[in-house]
Structure formats: structure tokens, C-alpha cells
Length: 316
Image (cartoon, rainbow, N blue to C red; front, side, top):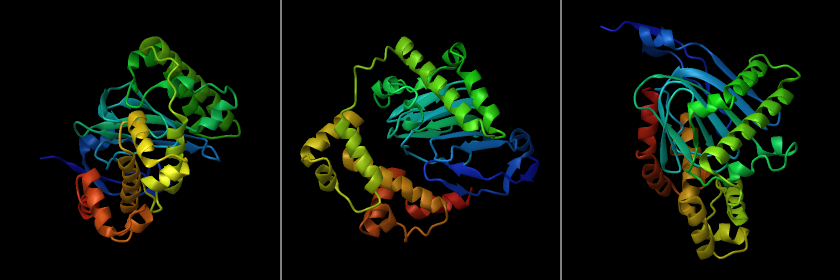
């Protein structure tokens, strides 16, 4: 018979929407509780140009689901084993590995089993580092979505990236007046080192550049997805016809433009539900014209109804 120890986990942050979700008084076996250390570090620059986070927890927390960011993200798995899906490509991550994602690159995490999940991640806005070196992200931007996202632990060690993360840890666990400057420097070195790996190990070059129209489309969606916009509105925003942007977007991003828009809306809906909002009151705030349309989209992209998703959250 398993011994049950009741512990209170510290609050943890769900990325992407800048709010805190509380998850307290969870039951774990004694063995699990021993492994679960109360150890969390999270630091943001005042203008959110970067965010560094360290967290050790159990993997049975509710994952965020398919989502994307407007910044570059580098996640380093310290302990555990996870499956990391980026734009349909699934990577198995083990201790020491790194996964990189670019702005607007969809990704989500799943766990083969309940395990300790220890990780650190760095999220960087492009403007933080381009003031030092204008082309610093060129190699990152030349990588096609869903390709070459994983940096193996061996390369991470060989290129000294772990040491750079240690530097960030030192300056963020007890922030001071030098923290933002030092984190910026360490971040720049991490980006440069990963760029070197992409060029040398994966033969990534800067000849491939995403069509600037696609970035304009993504920016328009990011600014307006919560409004009741459609493909026609998006086409007008970039002064092109909707047939052309539909073909262009699918070719560059890999999914239809309407799917991209709806996933962005459903990601917001999931976070509102996790934050305690009533499922029948949020559809309008997520860009849907009525509850039935929202309900169908939610079930299509999440695999369960909004109420099922909320009930599952309460039972965890």
C-alpha cells in the first residue's frame, strides 16, 4: 500500500498569457514527494524582452497543449523524459537535450509516464539582441518550421551551452542591477552557439528566408485573433487576395491559415478555462461568433469538449 504524503506545490506559471494559475494540495506518494523539490526560479526583464524560468515538478501537471509564442524559446531538459512535438514533428527529449522554437512555431509537450520533469527555458524577444548584432537570429530564421528543432545533449555539452545557462541561473536566482545586462550577454552567446551547431551539424544556411508576407499575416493574426476576423480580412490587411495568401501560408507554415487562426483562438480559450472562466462565457472573447462554433472548434482541436477539459482540470 502506497504511503500518501500531502504537500502543497508552489504556484506555477503557464507560458504565453502572463497569468498565474494556482495548483495546491495535490496528493503524491512519498517517493514522488521526495523527488518534488520546492524549487522554482522565474525572472522577466521589465519590458518582457526575455524570460528565464527554472522549474522542477512532476509531469502530471496539465500541459498547455498546442501553442506558439511571439518570441524565440529555448528549453533545456535537465531531468526526465518527454515527447516534444513541433509542427507535427515529434522529438524524444532526454536529460541534457535542448529544443528550440521560433516565433509562431506551434509546439506541445506530452509525457510517456508520470516522472520528475526538471527543465529551464529561455524566451527571448528579437529586439533584445539585434541591437548588438543585427543578424544574430538569421540562422534561426533560416530553419524551416518543424525541422532541426532538437540539439542533442552531446552537442550542448561540447559547445558549452550548459555553462551559459548556469550563468543565467546565477544572475536570476537573486536578481540585482546587473541581471538584465548579464542575461542579455549570456542569451546572445547561447543564440550564437546554437547557430553554430545548426550550421555545422545540420547544414543550415541563411539562403532560405520566409516570405515577409507570411510574417505580416502572422502579425495581423496575433494582433486581431480575438476579434471576429476571417481569411478575407487577413487578405485585405496585406493587400492580397485570399486564394493567394491561403496557398502561400500553407506552403510556408505547413497548415491552412484558418486552422492556424483557430488554434490560436483555442489556445486562448484553454488558458481562460484553466484560469477559472465559465466555458459558456468565453467564446466571444476568443473571436468566435457563437457558442456552437466555438464548441465544435474546441472539440476538433483539443479532442474533448470545453466542459470535459474543465472537469479534467478540476480532477487533477
